[in-house]
Image 1 (cartoon, helix red, strand yellow):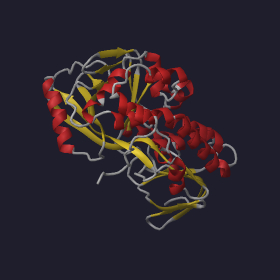
Image 2 (cartoon, one colour):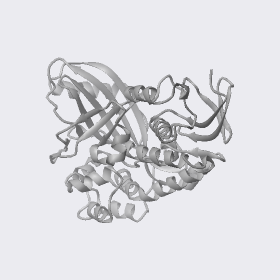
Image 3 (cartoon, one colour):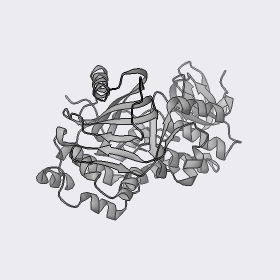
Image 4 (cartoon, one colour):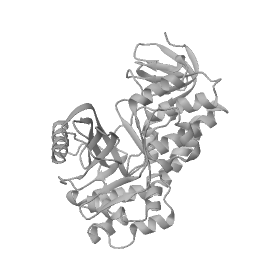
Length: 395
């Protein structure tokens, strides 16, 4: 039995929606809220990771109630021309632990899984069952979907949690192992050592197409494990297809999804890192800001978050430019050279890049010197004369 009226209805219980619900409850516990999720658990089937310094003290304290994996000792990257160990420590949150954390922290009345929204408006949400729940404020955090108004490419991945018969020997996260074959896309393997005999292995592609061939990716992970002498069994698997946004008409995109009086947030609202798809720092920052705003007049939430979305689009323009260079100036099998060059730069610059805090000097440094792509094509991209890739399957 659902409540028939609440203060805030949050539609979509992924990372953004879940964190917003938790932040609002923590900041304004007097407000009644519902976190509506079509599935039976929050967070779907995902793993979110971030670097320790991405969040700052407030964000780190905010995530303290969630059980997560933490590594000291830095991280690694591996490319054909060089490998590098960096000092930044790493964090990762599994969606199953995210779900468990939300169920511990939110009031029981707010836990509304298995509740698919059939329609939403400024006055409430109508569920697929036909039930109507009135709300003073609606926040739409449902999954992003392809749009004719945005352009770019795709990040396609399949990850497996493996248990090895003997210690696997990986003692720190490997953010990118790009020493693997580059089959018409920028491919790398991502490694998270979960214990001495358990490891998360993800095969990732920056590809022109959103097509995901699960069997092919499974076979490549198996070959990667075999080459390292790992005899293993698969404990869990996840897949994903994420847009890598390189441009578009953001106003038209937001307008196409907008409903008067409804707050549009999360990845659907454009709150992503357009190149890396690292969402945790952005989701935490946004959740804390929305929670603070919810302490005031709830009718102001749509305009408040709209302004934040527009500012986020402006401050991530540089990362979209780099995405254009990756997808338009580099041949698919040579895209790894863009990241190979990037990972020769000073470590503080790399840290700020992932946290969406690149300075003007950082941007100059990234673009200066000999480009890792053909010069003529790089110049065309920098001048905005490239041919962007439409989000969606190519004809």
